[in-house]
Length: 378
Image (cartoon, rainbow, N blue to C red; front, side, top):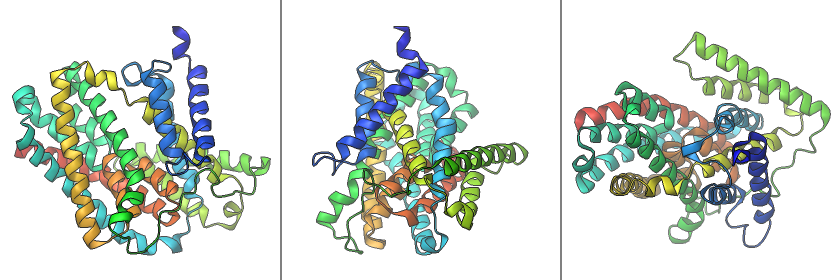
């Protein structure tokens, strides 16, 4: 049915899932889950039912949301950042992120010996391990960088299968990290002694999105995006997301921009839309169709992420028992900066939003190196 790939239809369905998530979040059932998690789950359900495209038949709209909407959501949420509030969060967040990165490498090496994927993957085994090391240190940029170096994208079914498994496991880990602080604080009390604040649903008020604010916010967002992309072409070593984040933080400190209404609303809605696409990419059938190969990839990947999670929780709990921060740092490893930012917003930790993006950028820098290092070691 051609209409299933119509971008207007798909966008309306994504908007419906976001709206449904926000309304359900206001109920007694949905309040503990939060709108971010509900948006992922609802969209994953309709994608696996075939009502909208999924990862194997992705459409340009999804790429557009990843390319444009996700970065702009970061920019708009950065407009609410108070630099004075993040001083204490910076170093602990970096420490937890580096800890999580090392836990990923340990997870890869342990899973390699437990699962023995080389028996099924052969000479492609170390490359898959390196790609997963990269993506679970800082995101998909590293995954693709390593794949391109070894022409792994020409492996067809194996490349697609690895992506499918990565999408499923990453989506599940978003769910886990969203629930992590609420669960862990019951067994191992947070040093701060407080539960994460859920600012979804009722959310942070913007005093209404008036026309004047909307005009300025759209202009500033689009102009900042253009500048960041232009600079990344002139200076390829400078990630565009870092420039965009920096511009947002600088503008947030100016009296004029700080008085604009609606930045938080625009950013939050954009995050929900981005997370809905993450849910659409959680394609269960694509993993099942791989049969033995898919099962091995799934077991290997799940083992890696579990070891990462357990190590990060145990050591993070001993060193710095702030479960929200630990969850955000772990998500920066497994999912990257945008999903880490979504967690910081969900937990109501505004002081962690900028550190979440910064460590996500650090992951982009470290992940490829760690990936190649693992390939050479194996």
